[in-house]
Length: 318
Image: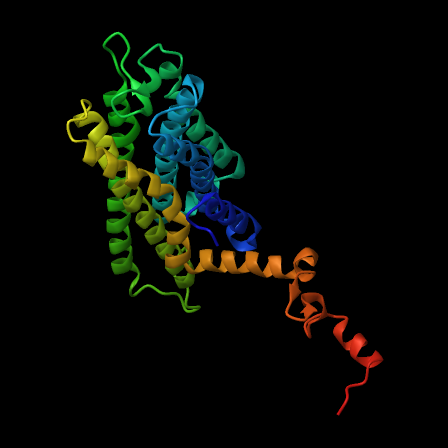
C-alpha cells in the first residue's frame, strides 16, 4: 500500500466505506472528510510543488498558482475543522451519551460536513476575489500563497480564527474528555449491573470509544506538529529572514497528508480490520483471481470452488 501518495488516502477512504461496522460509525464520516482533504492535497498540491522545485520557479501560470493557494489553505482548514467536529463528537459521546443518537442524526452529520467545507473554502474567497489580500506568487520564495494588497493581508486573521482558535477548541475539548473519563471511572467502579454492563454503555463499548478517542488525539497532535511551524513562520517571518526554517516548515506541512493512513493502521484495531477487509475483497474479486501465480492461475487454486471438479477429470498419479 502506497501510504505516502494519493493511493494511501484513496485506499483508506475505500476501506472505511466498505467496512460494515465502521461505515455506520458517526466518527467515520468526519474521518472520511479528513481523508478526502488529504487526497486532494496529494493529488493537486504535491505534484505542483514538485514542478516548482524541479524547475526552481513557477512555470504553470498565475491561474494555477491561485488555485494552488486556494486548495492548500482550504484543505488545511477542512482538516482542522474536521478534527474540531471529531473532538466535539467524542466529548458528546462521553458527556451526553443518552442524547447522542438525537444529536448525531444522518441529516445533522451531513449538515456539519457541508458547513465544514463551505466555511473552510469560503474563508479563502475574499483573497481569491482580491477583496482582502490576493492569491499569487511570492517572488522571494517562488511559492503560491496569500499576498498583501494595498498594504492589507488576511494572513494574521486567518491564523487566529482559522488555525489558533480551532486548536484551542480541540485542546479544551480533549481536556474536558480527560477529566470526564477520569470522573466517570471513579463513579462507575462500584456500580456495575448484574449483567456485567456499565450504565449507558458496555465495558467493551467504553474501551472501543477510548481507543478511538486516543487515535483522534494522535492525529490532531501530528497535524499540530506538521502545520504549526508553517503557520508561525508565515506570520512571524513574513519577510523571509530565515529561509531554512521556511523550508523545514513546508516539508512538515507536506508530510501531514501522508501520515494519517499510517496512524490509522498502526494505532487502531478497527481501522486495521478495515484494511484487511478491503484486501480480502480484492483477493475474492474475479479480476484478481485471473491474475497468474506461478504455473497456474489463482482461479485454479485449492480455494477455488471448481478445483475439486477438475481433479475428478484427471486422476492423480501415484
